[in-house]
Structure formats: structure tokens, C-alpha cells
Length: 169
Image (cartoon, rainbow, N blue to C red; front, side, top):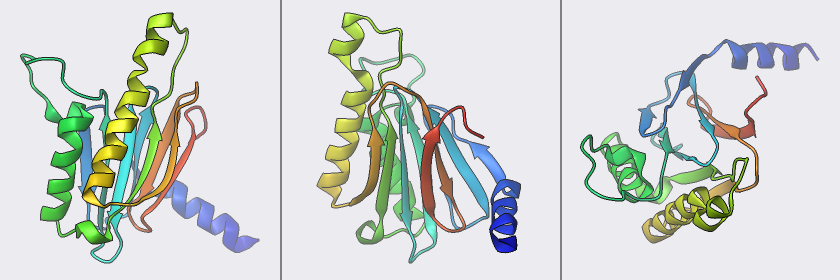
């Protein structure tokens, strides 16, 4: 019992780093917890345990709708995920060793009929899954959809990812 309490204390004492929409962080085993709060957004954690490299991206939308003034490719699944993958490779990750965990993509209320038709989170999730499939990267776990926001965590020391309701500390 004492070990379980010690382990829980160690996890909560690690530095937590929030990943905002349209950004990502890549780590090489520095002891921290990367976390993204997700509603319709989609979070993807990718890690290569062999190379001790991984990271978390927080995607806002499926794809750009036009040429925005302040272009931020990491906001979109179609542009951000390939950029994230490239940067992971440059950090030493091997595409053949990467595994993915996907979360988010919910319908957050109050919902209109238009929200149900557009299903932005569902579309973002589909694009993420298509890109990962095309790249041959297996999805270890996917917790997407639903009607509630969540928090995706990546422990950069153990490379374990967890998802929980957003209101839980």
C-alpha cells in the first residue's frame, strides 16, 4: 500500500505542461506530463519507446478553410499532423516504432442541427485516423466522440497516455 501512495505522489509532482490548440510538444524523456484539454478538438500522442522520443499535438480543426492571415499549420489535422510526424522523425523517432493514442472529437453542447451535420470533431478524428493509417502508425487506443470534454495526458518518462473527463484533477 505504501508503494501505491508513493507512486501517486510521484506522478502528481511531475511538471505538467498544457498543450494549447494549434501547438505540439516533442520530448525525449524529460520527466513531465503533457496534457491537452479537448472538446471538439482532437489530441494525438505519439511515442517511440525505443528512441525515447514522443509528443502530444492538439488539433483544432480538420483542415484550413482558406488562406488565413495568420497561418498556423498546427491548428489543422491535414497540415499539423504531418508536420508533427516530421518533427518527431527529426528528433530521432522511427515511423515504424511509433504508436498513437487519440482522444477528443466530441460534440459539445448546446448543440444545433448544424453542429450535428458539421461534426467538426468527428471530421478531425477521421483525418487523423486516415493519416496515421497511411503512414502505417498503429493506434494503440482511441477515445473519441461522445458529448463530454476530456483531458489527454502523456507521461514523457513512461510514454503512457491516459484520458479522463476534463473536470478531474
